[in-house]
Amino acid sequence: MLEELNPFAIAQKQLDQAAEIMGLDSATHELLRWPLRELHVTLPVRMDDGSTNVYHGYRVQYNDARGPAKGGIRYHPNETVDTVRALAAWMTWKTAVADLPLGGGKGGIICNPKEMSEGEKERLSRAYIRQVGRILGPDLDIPAPDVATNAQVMSWMLDEYEAIKGYHCPGVITGKPLPLGGSAGRGPATGIGTVVTIREALKRLDINASTTTAAIQGFGNVAQSAAIGYIDMLGGQVVCVSCWDHKDRASYTYTKKGGIDPHFLVTITDAYGTIDKEAAMDAGYEVLDGDAWIGLEADVLIPAAIENVVTGETVKRIHPKVKVLAEAANGPTTPEADEYLRGHDIYVIPDFLCNAGGVTVSYFEQVQNAYGYYWEEETVHERMDKKMTAAFHGVHETAQKHNVHNRMGAYIVAVARVAEACKLRGWV
Ligand code: GLU
Image 1 (tube, rainbow, N blue to C red):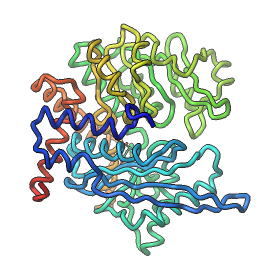
Image 2 (image 1 turned 30 degrees about the vertical axis):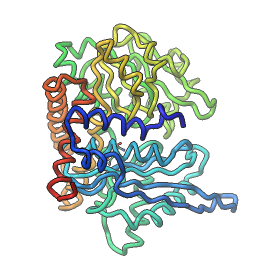
Image 3 (image 1 turned 90 degrees about the vertical axis):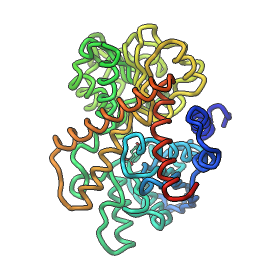
Image 4 (image 1 turned 135 degrees about the horizontal axis):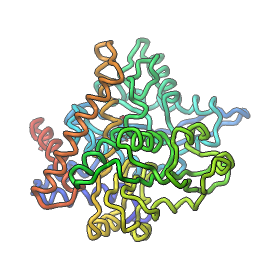
């Protein structure tokens, strides 16, 4: 991987900048540059045709000074230990910026789930827990869904963990379906949390949200709920969504005059966020190249898929009307693009602030699991909105105080909290 696109190198570089601005002592800085622990696992899985495939996976516990490690598990063909390390670092800053009593971790398996049957995915998920389960627990490390994993995958993992332990332990994993101890409102939480931060950013910029438009990249869980929330909560319009089409092995942007209808598009989208192209065209959607989303005229851009999509090259295609970049995905913007955005007065809501709604509701799920009493969806949304709003303004004000951009503001808030916990523990 090119060093400038290696997410872990990017994560370390971002931390280095924050450490310098904050005057962080060198021991704490060095401690926070690296994961505390990581487990690399090899997973033999019986395939439907009787053969055995051997997969490789990871679980990285980046820092748990503030509480148990927390973070999702991704199934991705291009997963590397460095992508998992970067995502685990960002989870550490994410739980800290949202002021949750949790640390950060992440897991990943190198695989292509789109080419696997349900049975093969179940056996892979169970094999992962047989290896990684030994370092998981509600007070140790708690996984959740991420790219290409969902509530069904969490159910298999929970079942395998409980079968090994011999007792119920719903708090070991979040993003579970409701009958297995999931929280109301966890599914759309990341997308809705994104919309909460956009709402607050538009207020700060003195822009009436209901007159705005957004261009969204992706149409998986996060993009779908962000699109629905943008229309239903803000009264704005969504000009496009995009998706990877695994049948065509190409990506497309879907746009429509007067705005797209995410409620309709969801009905013609498969479990991996691939929209049925023919059905969309029949319904009057225009199908553009997958990269087109970034150049469309809109007030707000929402990359809601994977890392490294706003690069030194694609950033130049951003429409001059764009005022806000809301990073619903983890690590969508490269440092080179970041500089360009600062030069062009685009208000960035940095990833680990923008998408913290998911882990915030994961934390609520754990709380509900701990006392075996479940909240109404409305209560979950209200509490999440409150936490996200407070986190947003904390970052905005810190950035203004230090005269830095929002990503640095978010790092300063998060790193100060994690550093304080490390110091109180006597680690540094
Ligand atoms: N995978 C989500 C994230 O990146 C959620 C993590 C969690 O709920 O633990 O924030």
